[in-house]
Length: 259
Image (cartoon, rainbow, N blue to C red; front, side):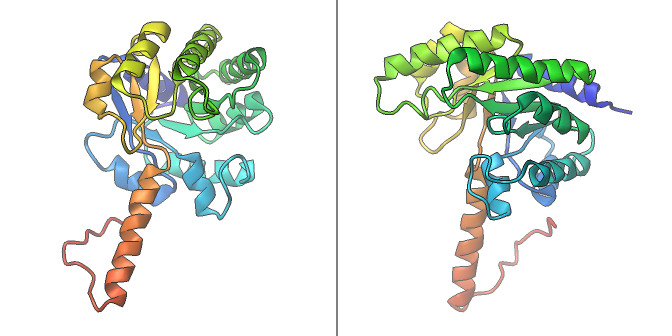
């Protein structure tokens, strides 16, 4: 039987491997099963924005934690032995307790964002998350997110790079496994971040206009995820299909029975 601790160790090994870990974000049990069925899938990651949207909430901890964790637990159950990393926003006010409860539904890793809080407060959040995993006997895999780019507020990119490096080093020292730096990062910026934080210690997001997974891998990035983009792809396909049906079309014959 694969235990929660076993899954956490698997996720940590995937982060440390020379090959970049691609996690195609999911938002419910059927999207998780659909992605898990692909032979290339090695781990599952939830998208907090997408889960909130599924229940009609805006992103940013507006969804009640109980509702979010219930759905994440269903995702864990749907994908069997695959490790699941959850988007826990900024920790829902108590990162330690939130991680403890996430572990309770089978989660083995998470993103927790700093929202550019003062560095000492952000480090304390990382420490609380790691301590919660240790208390539960799970080597919890924290993908500590810094919003140095997405909350930059128009400051020069050099300042965002320096801020991300300072924060990233502090989060790793506090026990985080990776540093998640969302934003559209070109090769030059990515190279500076990897040089400053560490090879295979950076996690990025595959937004439109970003580099490919292979390009990020060559630069020393450990992980790439896609956040709410995957749900947007699915919803775009749904809306386009509906428009075609309203225009007199039919369901395409090549539609696969994935549900």
